[in-house]
Image 1 (cartoon, rainbow, N blue to C red):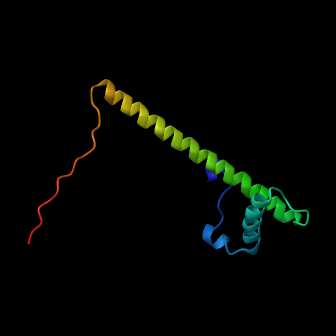
Image 2 (image 1 turned 90 degrees about the horizontal axis):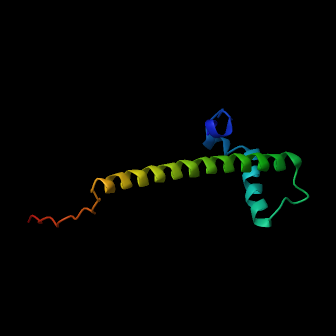
Image 3 (image 1 turned 60 degrees about the horizontal axis):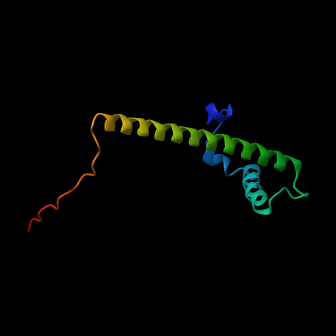
Length: 101
């Protein structure tokens, strides 16, 4: 996550979930999505936390999607190279094993 968000993890991420502020940010992040916007009564600190959380979450999601896309591109390139050499991967057929009595 550090390479994506430039933020260094300072403790156990599971322990952070017990923090009341973190719990409030996660709760309001879901509520903002559900409602389609920020309620007027949301404290500024929570709204800022939701914004930072959503930004970091989006960056990590985009990074993961880029890695998955690169992996699929590599697989496709390998498959095309194998096909050009005349090799086509066939599914493995397993024969039933004999049962011992």
